[in-house]
Length: 89
Image (cartoon, rainbow, N blue to C red):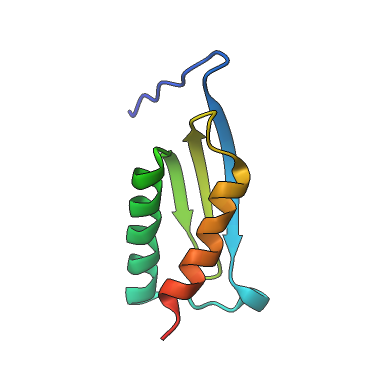
């Protein structure tokens, strides 16, 4: 059994984020799926974001994250643009 502890108070913010591929193409498979997972972890670690739960499907990524209040959701949205440039050949 896994126990999760959640911070409660005014100094914690939680988001459920979903990123999907363009036109819902099922491209998140094999090595690309592993690369996306690693990039998500790196970006969150650099930003001070804690991934509480994450699931990668073949056409979208679900994450439940704990974000410091100083970080705006628009800053996390920039991750979408960065990921697109990283994965392009």
